[in-house]
Every structure is written in C-alpha cells, then in structure tokens.
Amino acid sequence: MYALNSLVGPDIGELLEQRRFDRLRAALLELEPADVADLVEGLEQDQAALVFRLLPRDLATDVFSHLEPERQQSLIA
Image 1 (spheres, one colour):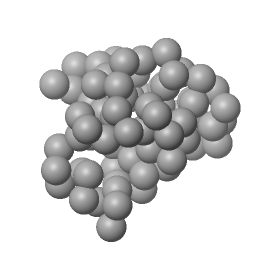
Image 2 (image 1 turned 60 degrees about the horizontal axis):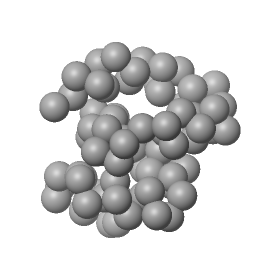
Image 3 (image 1 turned 135 degrees about the vertical axis):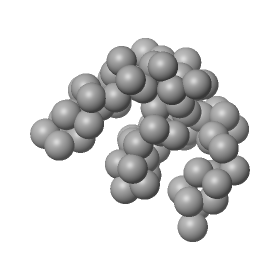
Image 4 (image 1 turned 180 degrees about the vertical axis):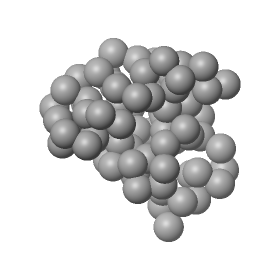
C-alpha cells in the first residue's frame, strides 16, 4: 500500500522542510488521488494536514475518499 510513499516520501518530506509548497503542489497534481492518499497515509499528522491543505478542492475530495477512516478523522478534527 505504501510502496509509492517509500519512493517519493523522502522527496515530499524534503519539499515540506524547504517550504517549497509550489513544487510540492505541482508534484501532487501529477499523481492519481489514490496515490496521493497513500502518501498522506504515510506522513506524520502535521505533514499530512499540510499536504492535504495544498490540494485543490476537487482533488482533496477525491483523496479524502481514499483515506483510512482514522486519517480522515484526524484531518477534520
């Protein structure tokens, strides 16, 4: 489930640390919603929330539907 996260997860973390949100958002837009959800699932809570907020509304809706219920709850709590 998290195979994609092991490949691009370090890059995502690096972009977050460098606060390169424009590049991160552009990279996320290239992925399928299920793949973005896998990435979000593999991140720490604060990073997951930040990545989720970077998504356009339509993509965020699709990604949210692919997340585990616990992660969904943590994003809306």
